[in-house]
Length: 131
Image 1: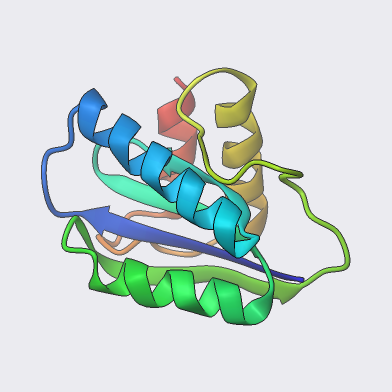
Image 2 (image 1 turned 30 degrees about the vertical axis):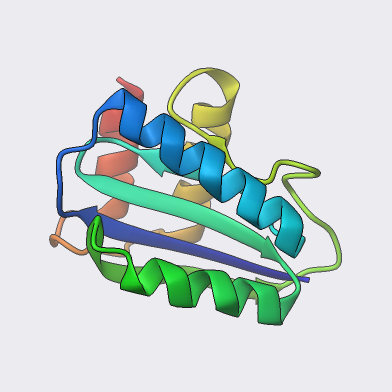
């Protein structure tokens, strides 16, 4: 199983309704492809974890790269693992509650010292979003 984590820079203003639609559509699509994961959004950056069959993750990433809602996609982690972290979650938004903390910790652990697409340190972005 492949686990890929990326961060990107948002190019458009997205309201809650847009995010609900994005997560709902992605969750259905991912479920059909055997992809699980989580999406994190702080109004400036997206960060997403995708896990599943390597070919399925590649297919999702090809769609993501073409998506006009964000740019400057930076891969933080791309590893093979024998287990899933996100169980049956086709896609969950990690902006509140324990999901936000879990995603923040995962990003912090994967991105030590790395810069986000806009040059800020990923750890600073994640920590500030927890305040």
